Length: 272
Image (tube, rainbow, N blue to C red; front, side, top):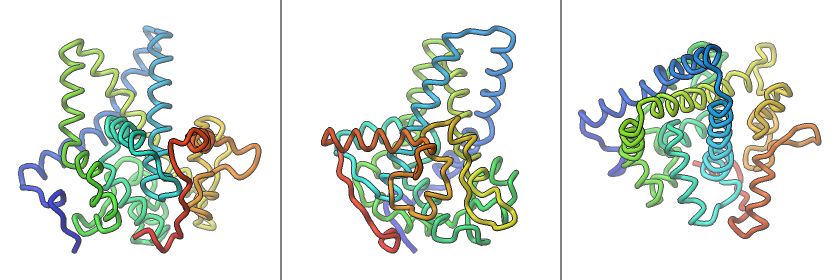
């Protein structure tokens, strides 16, 4: 069993961590729903623009860094860019980087089997959308051993909720509506990320990953090209054809041209 000083938590810390994860998973999307209903009654174009910008920004951070760089190691960001990205990723409240990485690598290793932590064929679509993924902690942190041994990821693993609770407290002190608005953004961001696990595995006949043109054109960052990604998971280019918009790949290409990262290919067997 893989152990580290970050994976060993006291019962109280484990309970607090679990309750906060439950809050971000189940309650925050309700703030998103409330915000949408409120906009139907009291429309505010500035709020809509800010909501869309923040949701897309967090989505790009997740796909470019969490998914393509840290989980699949398809490219390596410069250390300063890496630190900034990890800070903003953590604020997105989609769980700690090592946990996200462990879940996703296990998903690829055991894709669409009964051991897949979020296969809609075996777990059910509603379960995937509205429940926490079942993993064997702390043993499954083995999947993210490289992140757990990285001092930066380890720091954010240990202080993940401190960072988020500090921001929430600041927003609360300024204006409680700012806090509710931020939770609405996070709720949508979390719900959207979980929905891709259903959208990308929605062919009950073949039970294989699928691409979605509709959501690919809607979200633009490249995640809905799920079949392309499963066929070549260590390639940071998810869009393979001209009509498969992948702005996440375009931004990675820009970072590489600016010297803010390196293109680093790994074989799938190297990802433990």
